[in-house]
Image 1 (cartoon, helix red, strand yellow):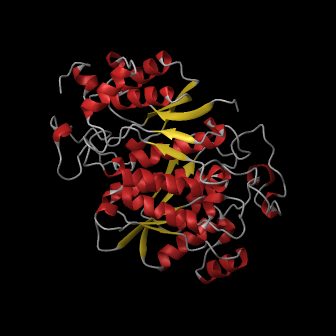
Image 2 (cartoon, chains in turn purple, red):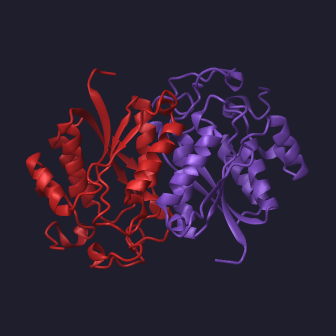
Image 3 (cartoon, one colour):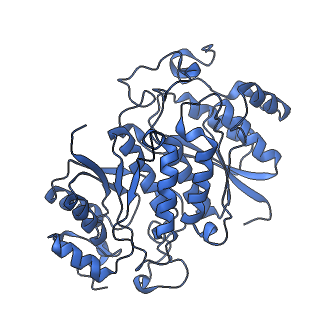
Length: 205
Length: 205
């Protein structure tokens, strides 16, 4: 352990997580970046995440393999379900692009790494405003996760030390980009479109 | 969906999870069994789990690959740390055999499968009495996990439908075996020793 504050940052390669990494660093956290290869169709995300992590000079960038595609039922991993082009504007119900329990699974693996590294801070770039249909992007989910994590781990037993940071959770997309620009985030390296592999970065959606 | 109640049961291949599966079936749940290949040294567990699942005629038995060994720091996955022979009787502190956030990770993957299958009941054979050093084996952890899961998922949004069952949590090992015998669990198929691969089933600990 160094004297620096350390954090794990979930890094998808999208705009939100790139901004979240910059926020964590602006708060003087030494950052470990964690990305997931989970059977998603948009592998371009992982290329972007690698580039962002390198530019940000994180301590370590780990790409964790987890085959969520083995559980069918989501357009993001199941090739038999088409991705609707208007998924971003869907405000009713739960989007077809929802991956079951995704943030729960990703945070849990981050928690495992945090325990090994004796890190007490985890950053995740979830955002309740734009993705209102995803149950695991809401503030009450993050709070409940933090509560659970403090009962699941050594750091928790030693006194509720574990903190899940979701600094974007109530921001609009415009506010996120404004904040990212203030922190010099280079958005040209991000991939923020689920169809990126098919359409290229400038898919225009 | 059938008219039967359905459940996912975490099945390690040990005595506790074999009993938990029998309990779930005795409550008329149609069971899906979920095991993990997580870089553990005791692969004999997975052979045992497969045998138990087959004998119990579960609907499906899935072995999910997840490389927790990529995070060092536990005797169970890190070959550089020796497994102490007296780990079972350790009552002070957190045992060296603790795998970081293991039950959190395993329950999260069970939750993902549950969402896909539209199953609302998950059984886990954790036991607070014998393994008092593991923070994620305590009733308060299970309760907090259930609370979080109901905020993370569709089933939760529709009204706190998700239930994490831990029927052994307050039982002694003797009571578990007594209950298992009443339910005709064949314990000869279980592997309940972390050193099973090295010492064989009858390692005598």
